[in-house]
Image (tube, rainbow, N blue to C red; front, side, top):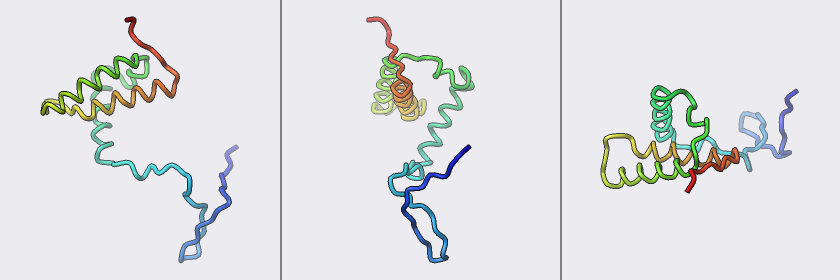
Length: 109
């Protein structure tokens, strides 16, 4: 079954409680929740428009790049008709997802 990982290092608290240290562990608590909320709203709206996780079905990386660049430039040019920065993050995360899943799909040139 599951085991509790142990680094062998301990942190003791004034109360006497002891825990494994957080050294070398991912610090999820450092992510900006306000920004993540906007991105989550973008995913929610996309799920309503297309389907939940539609983007995982195989959008080519170069399509994510094209869309990220377009949304970034729209934001840079002052367009505020959509949350363009959240769209940029959505597309960047799609690129990262493709890399993590070794999905190297591109349109024919």
